[in-house]
Length: 226
Length: 314
Image (cartoon, rainbow over all chains, first blue to last red; front, side):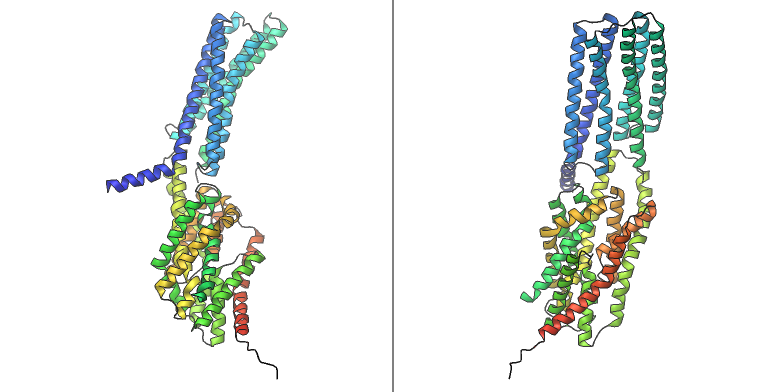
């Protein structure tokens, strides 16, 4: 009896081997996203506290490496899914979702490179506001990772997470407008004002993208009901 | 043995054409490998033939008196009709060609069991209607259960895939149980085969068709079904299988393709969209009318040709 159950279980596992691998790769992708987020946060902390230094260059390099690794994992998932794993509509949903999520580590990299290549200095009166914008934006990312978990593991209610991300995104918009107003009210060089405005817009884009992905996940979850 | 070649050809064509109705969605969307589906379908077709194929064979053997020559003629005419209709691009059902040919033999014999033939013809109309009703009932029933399951995306996918495979196996089983009579019943009527050897040869030849030529048919027919989502495809395959199984209990071979059309229509009614194109409906109606008529006519022609005698000129 037990032997039969064991054989049955082994056949079942073998049959759904690709699904298991996709699940593991998605976990791996989310780990990379978390790591990219940590590196970005550390890099921004170093930049806002100490400005340009070797630590910042190292953290930017680390963020780039993790972002590339996330890309590789995404391509691996893509290949595996088109090679028979999952039902067709799920393949499209997951690939679209990962592509949308992937823009977030892309934004981390873009912001850090923008600061590094343009040698952008931040005036002291903006530091606290920028830190707040980064904190709320990254909170959106944390909630987004939880929402992905909820979609794939059914651990939490997706609707409440969508609403939390939406609130954070509104808060980010508010902070973003406040910072831009303060930049243009200041006596800074007009060219620096434009550079700073661009960085702030890109920082705000993190929560905007998280909100877009979150809504997409809500649709995926809703349309699975028959 | 050579007299059975036409039956084997008919079984081969039946297997090649009908595998798409049971495993089409899973294979054409690459959820299941073709060979896995083909092996499973062949095994279950044979099982269905052996375990439940007898009832439908008895219905056909009771329709008219058969000799070996008549059995070969009707089998050949059925196979010819399937080929002709396929070439013309019309959806063909062996469950209509065989009664058409038997009807012609009945005319030649001047002996036809009208009530039995009436039952068979009534079931032609009942098949798609049954498919619609069962699909609607199954959709509501299964949706109620599915929506209550607190499962994530991966679990839902695994469950749907597994259910599609199980439904495919059940579909193959009912295909074998119901349609094996189309392949070899006339030879049982002629006394050439026992019921057991008839279901065995019939089941094997259908399986042979599945293994050798169902792939291109799946690629074309299966893709029409896969436009439905996985849940709807599951309902369609299950509704088709249940419909065909019910007719197996009644003892009448019916068309799996017509049951699928009914089931797709049923899902369309529930989901509120038009799943069948008008052109497809016209083709199906045309085939319903033409198939038995062509089979009957072809049987009469073959019989006429075989009875021609060469008279030497004076």
